[in-house]
Length: 236
Ligand SMILES: [Zn+2]
Image (cartoon, rainbow, N blue to C red; front, side):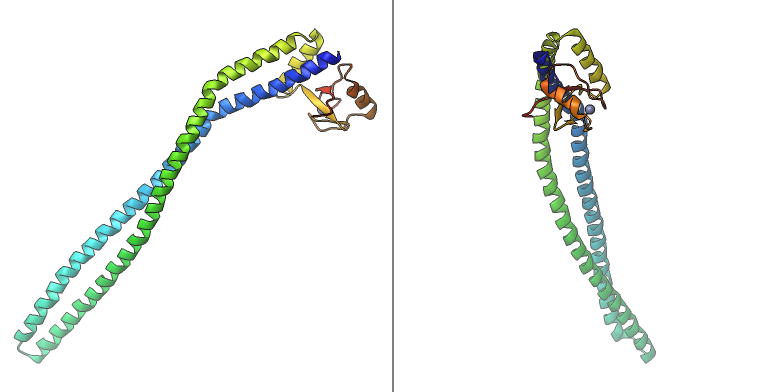
């Protein structure tokens, strides 16, 4: 029986590897999708920044054109100033020229503000682009790694399953059926180590007298709390 318990404990270890591999396999598409989503988000952010920059540049060009037209206008007004006949007309025209000049000053300031804004946004855009490039490279490597893992994983799982089944085939019928039943009920963990009087499957205390029996590894003893097959392994 001691040999059989040790065999079923080994089978359990392989079972855990199988579960681990199957989980990785199951999570792979989700992981890849998450990485794709991340790249898309960075791309969209950069795209948005580019759009805003283009919008502001358009605005700036429009203002510069306005400025040109208005400067012409004020020049024309200034030449007309010499053609006016009355003081009243002269004063009115001066006022008009001043208004145009004030408007021009405002437009010039607007242009400067727009230029500053564009400069800042271009910095953001550049850093978004370099972040994108960096993540694209990293994600490509990560994806290649996952794809390679997946390719070999089916084979690995098959090999592990054979190893496990070989071990299960050499233990007695009762031990095997308890194992298989518990494996279903306890998320793949049918055998647990018992250490310092505690079942490491459910972390409940094992009654001292029972624990002494468990440490002998001489009979099939199940945890009173979780029902798992208890195995005593001092080194693990
Ligand atoms: Zn337990």
